Image (tube, rainbow, N blue to C red; front, side, top):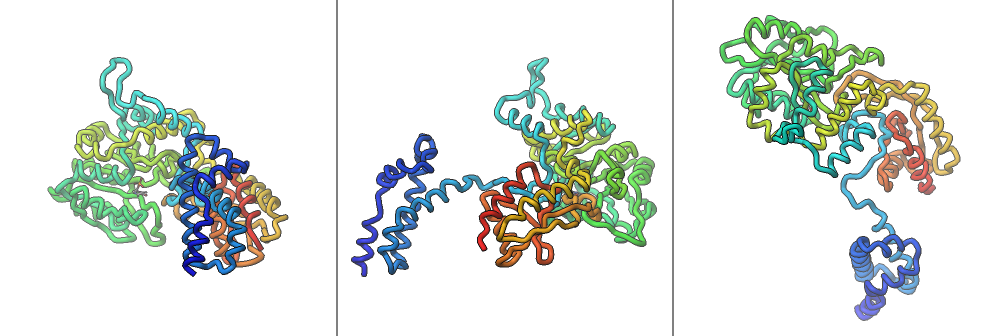
Length: 471
Ligand SMILES: *Cc1c(COP(=O)(O)O)cnc(C)c1O
């Protein structure tokens, strides 16, 4: 038996033999003609030959003659599979979930124009921290500060790595070793790792909870103020709503109290938005501009939620407070990366120029229902001839995501798919495991693809992938 194994192993070709045979195969020419691809090809051949050795050693091949005959085509298939597989860990994904700000899928998409600006900034040197006029060292914050002030009406602004960092920095700067008063209805947890009580602790501040889960009054804050109080903090209850018998203190009321007691009032706006969403029929929430206008000392929000830009933590407010943030040593550790800064500048310029429709988040949130119906019917039509599935046009709801407007359900149209063979769970997995992962949603015994979050060309890829489904 062992002798037989040895004989089989000896029939395996050497790496150079494989290469010379591949030279006669057209599919492999891109890998053979490109010098830089050659090491990769050699590496893959070694791995595939190793796999063949393991197969022989496991001795699964009773009909070895058959294995020997098909060895060459087996090697070729294995090699092509390896070579055409994406090489990176980060890969593009098709979002058919209808969740616009999907945290697992990278939250907000940048506008193509902004992405091109980022690519240019990545490839070339820039004036990131250079004052071109004087030739002296400059600050990276100048590139966005004026824009942010113009757009929000604030006196001053700065940016850090993300909103969690912004809240941490604010707490550390103004409340280290002191007390911060927060309503019990606003002790938020976002996405598992961000909890207001823990961020306060990390910033060295002591949390003082006031009011109850559903009701907090201004007098609750008032009576909790002691000589140890450093900050009155308001937190946007991003991802939940307390409904029914409720009362919360508005930012404006808190600002008034802060002013009479000489305390800064800080607000974590969470997503933060330049629009109130009223024209989209969303429940009214204060905009960033309104929060600033109410006289808040500092307000912070994310760059990659409703703003539709890169991951960043934006802080706007009074000049004296921004100045103190900039002087904190932590700012250096939490500082915003130059590519994020470029993406943020690009996105803010779109707002300034009134090119809101070019910001993908807002385009997806405001696309007319009729356009969604049309796009979904086109996809249904393109899939109708596929014998492995049955498809239907259905109505459903999409979500904003990213902890923004959690109760809003956006009416949408979906392409509903059911496999002729197998389960919807298998179909969802089949879509996800293609060359380009296609993310969908299982609803009862259907797989839904919500067209709201599809990009141009995604439909064709979905049709192509489903064409590979066997039945
Ligand atoms: C999302 C969110 C955060 C965290 O923001 P990141 O930019 O993800 O760090 C903090 N606070 C609130 C209220 C949020 O909604």
